[in-house]
Image (cartoon, rainbow, N blue to C red):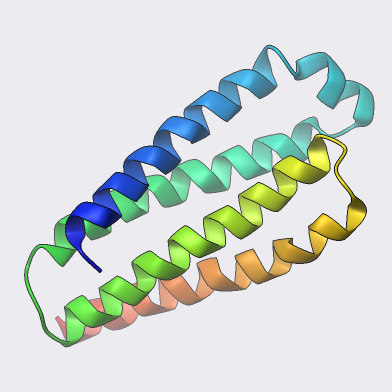
Length: 127
């Protein structure tokens, strides 16, 4: 993965994470509270922001060049991006009243996030 792409994705995830967090705390607060989904929304925002920061750090690591560590770090980046979209995205949809079947993506996103952390650890061991 190109470090610039990882950095751009980190920026997009970070910016949209702050925006969705602010929306949940202000514009959507009443609706989320009435549906009992405020905690779900906050969990989605939390995971999105944590992985945006981790992805930004990983983008810096990817600048070191090719090798086993970079390859594993690239997989960590891919998995964190996909996992964040699946995990947080499905929680946002559920919190907003989307179809219950959209929650089917949440555990796949969680597994991708965990696998990304395993690849990050493998990259550290290889580097």
